[in-house]
Length: 167
Image (cartoon, rainbow, N blue to C red; front, side, top):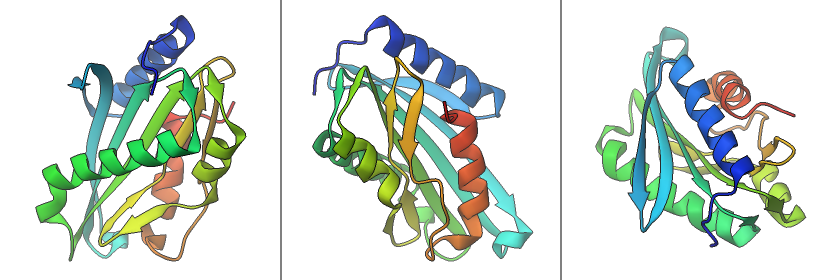
């Protein structure tokens, strides 16, 4: 994965950081093998979620070309990262979700299709990958409802739209 952040990519990541902070997320940048990765986290508790707390992570990294393979690999890495931090909390009345996003200036159509196809689910954890074209602001992601995690669907769609607006 090419990791040089062009001006549009850096501008998009900076704007995403600001959107995360404005929504009350804890935000930091970590070095993942020489790549600066933006990480936002928030925890929300709602009685209508059957008194469940959802830990939502947004993890975004710069790249030049977003491919389906790169997005799938990054999504798996992001999920492993989240589960290493909040995995012990999964299960009854606790869940984790992640928006793993690759932000580039070239997006392969297959990457956009893979991101928009469905959410990826594990036990009490789900991911909604995002393929972002920083030059147009287009962010491809699954924005619908799924049978698994249906109680969080509206919340996740709202947060996805807030952090990665539809261009």
